[in-house]
Image (tube, rainbow, N blue to C red):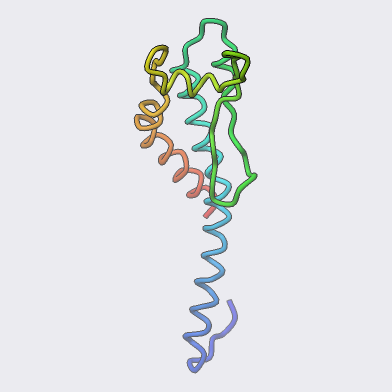
Length: 124
């Protein structure tokens, strides 16, 4: 570490904190992938598996967005000539619904947070 002039202490501390902030930002962005994997695993476990296609169709966005990860299901079904997301039908339909997505997410929050924090600790 270079010698810091007392007259520039504030600037030196600011530079160090900015550098540390950049390290934490990058570690957090990378660690979100671990949380994404936890949620996908839990959603697959909770998914109905009549054919197995729905269970296998959980996908995450990966590193497409900074400090954001999105998880969704890509399985589509035809209904009255239209393609509909099977996850929306299961989660929100009043006649065919078997809601589990929100409940699974909510019950996974602590596990997701732990996975993210553990990854950040490895990097920082």
